[in-house]
Length: 210
Image 1 (cartoon, rainbow, N blue to C red):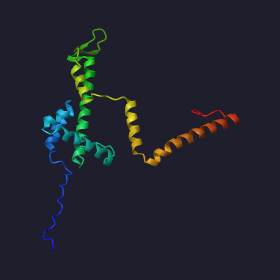
Image 2 (cartoon, helix red, strand yellow):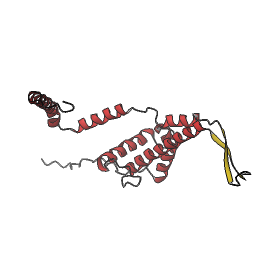
Image 3 (tube, rainbow, N blue to C red):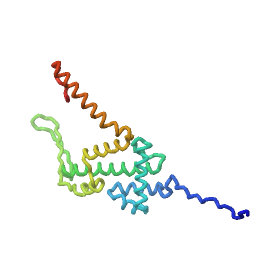
Image 4 (tube, rainbow, N blue to C red):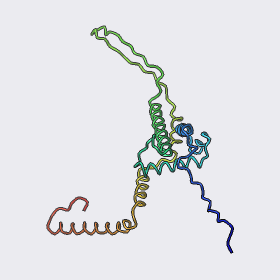
């Protein structure tokens, strides 16, 4: 008996577009300006009318592109729009942090209220002299300090950054490299001890670090 029912082809799932359709130049500009003034990522997304998870995903994907395809180079004109967004937001926040730090430094010196110059002729020597007078008032650094804290709420020490970088490097090692690392370290230690022993026997001063 012949089966008259035609076999229906499997329906393919639509592929996800590589270029996010919502990430227009206008949206990118709104996100950049919102984060530059200290708004958290989530609130910046709200201000731009974009879903919070969408913005965070763009930033995460942009960071991946920067690290894997651009050798860590932040390019605001990157052909990958997510990498361009990541570069713009990152550089804008860094510039805002620099400005806030400068404002704090200026406030520590005091704000300039007036600046005047006076020139006169010395009645004794006949020389022309000039004098600069600056009047200052105490500056208020609290607003800039607040902004700086918002831009980087969880500053990390160099040790933490180095530990994270070491962990990233270890994650890139192949299983063979990870297996060989302890063996190579042990071999280096034994070689160092052997050299130190020979130096003691022939009277050679030990090398620094041995």
